[in-house]
Length: 410
Image (cartoon, rainbow, N blue to C red; front, side):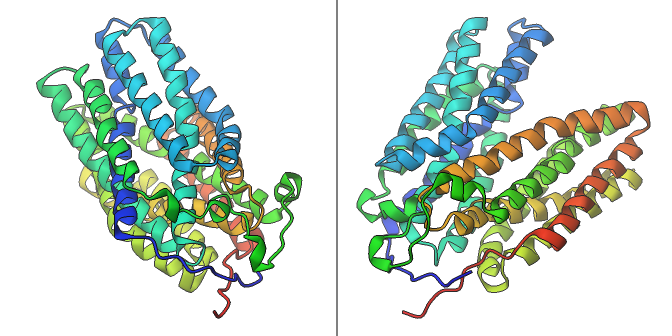
């Protein structure tokens, strides 16, 4: 890759901390739309078919909205405004769940939440890139991943406590309330410090580093298409793994299964929080490809061990490998997309391309794992997922180019 002619970025501590806390509270808000939805709607006498329809609507909108969501952020003059509107929509969606759990209202809320989420991710990446520039984006993305992981873990505990002590409805009231500090944190990011050209992956004209801004030129970049395939294989191997393991351990002992699953969620989140900044720094020192190889190797090992390990304590240890994979890809997805889309002005649309691949893989993974488990055995299903991960590892080794750009001397 040709060297970047870096601009000097000096974001204020206020903007840096504002982005930290925006990501932290946003993770809190998004956590409320996890498994708590199915629990709450079940208490509202919804049938499993109705819950399935609601989840499907959200999944379809989320999948179809990835590229349009990125294009909206690319076209926006203020990423902060787009992010603020999206947070407001998500907060109102939570309020809709809490106050009017009728079928039509919940379906609209699910669609609005999914659509807003399609612009949240690109908005965060755009704000980050515009704030610190391409020379420091790796470390900034590692910092983002740390605060998102901390937010997820703390929110899961808080909402679980509220759901247990008050009611399942209270989870969505808390989610709505948490949208307020999220917006306050967003307001602490100074818009004047966000470079509008770099936020969209464009090269300022004065740098003289001309790159084609054609969308079709970007979509023909082999690195983008190969990386989208890599992410699809990652999700195809990974998304169905923990639900399958949860099913297996519940069948063995429903008494200790909830505690085990909770530990299997918390342990990787802790690893992500600890390791993400380190990943961001090493991505610039080592390059992107070595870290991708490490992440997929950890995924292969994890799937293989799940097929052979049965002791509940060792299952938690095995799940720690998920933290390695999550820490790497939490940083690598926006970082590699920023590498590939550099100068195009379509950074956020390119994120949508990879996001679509993510959605496809995540949708198919539980089906693949469930089919293999029902047709053969759970051990065979885990081995099948390990094979998919191994294919991804080979694709990275044989086809994925190194996308890190060298920094030109100032």
